[in-house]
Length: 586
Image 1 (cartoon, one colour):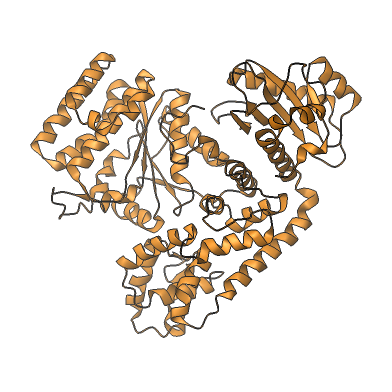
Image 2 (tube, one colour):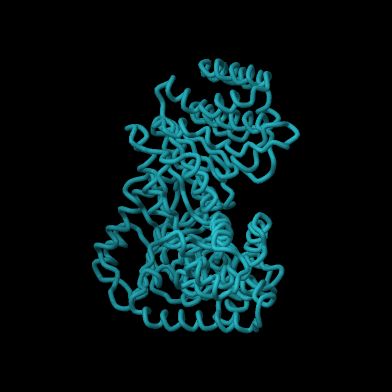
């Protein structure tokens, strides 16, 4: 897949999983053409990968080019004059629209200076045969110069809807960090009069089905409050959870390859369990500043985890503390820490206001406590229970330990060794679980074998061609392993049907052999002719999707091959190996 809108994740290959979410939203986007998709809010705590997901959704929609025009806008923290915001919002929509219509993604990347020039915009729409946009540009320019801010926001907010209506087109509007509309935008240039109901403008706009919105925010309670109070009934809510175990393990292997930090089959599962499928936690372990990090042993993983959650330079700790301090700066801190700590320590159950008043001996009324609790819920520091008088700590093992390690000492007697012992107990539990599940973790074992072989291709094979050639049968006479441009497991874009998964795909430079590989890592069954036929079909599909001018096909099967399979591989010039040296250290 090409990248049109630059993705914050960095290397696009690091994007992992989210198959369920991508399937749902791609179907939702397709539903815009039928007029059946309603504006939707993605509700999830910060650092769950929402921005990466939304940017990938934009790029997939752009690439699909199937009648829905994507528009992505990210609101950031920091005060903005409404006039500046409206112009930026409009021109980003305008140039993303032009980029899609002309299939020229370079328009998305125009500098802010070039985007601010009205005459340049008019010149471009005329040059590209999009003259009908000139009326919209002139209209925005006129209102912008008049400084009628209310009217300006009405015009630019409804520009996507109006253009879609006029041209009989469909647009999906993706707005990230939607909650900042009401907190960071000011009516006056001096930024003294906050536009605290700015988002309410979407009361009517969000109802249009030819240009519905996908909005998200990093502050769940805050976003829900704004949607409920200002936009009731205008958005359906989509819960965006942490990743499932198989996708988290795949992410662990990808990051281990990218950052060249070895993991084992066992520690990869431990990382997946410990992170509870949160992509930020996985990323933080591989980008840690911990001295001499070791993720290949349980003790090494424990040391990195402790550093990340307790050390002042730990990224996980600092990220959460930035979040907590931001909330406490808006909430009277008196008793707030005691309340959060108590809920953290009892997070497996819901706690009533009455219990909090009694157990913590709080010098406040029930009404005052309710207001404080609602503020903490809005800041995502605690969660509301089934009723409006019950509350619960955030169900996150790592946040719990970060908060306690920072604040528990100032509230009550606390030995910091408790945190280490709790981590140790969790890792021991995951280790027991790993051994119990070992016989049933075939997909994980296969993924780990792919990871090991990919590492061998990335770092070893081209340095020792003679050995690795000898380990693999039926290679072409002129074949040699090279320093590959990239080596990954290949997954087709979600917009491609049927889905395609290639275990190993090594891209090579001009004139060199690329490698398309199949990996079978199991205890008894040999690789069969039917599996060889299936692999050949996958190769043919891959060649339809990707330019692979020169390639060799290699099958690794730990338990060997049936005679029929070997005959088929020979007949179709495929190579094979069962040499365990391919599974060298990760």
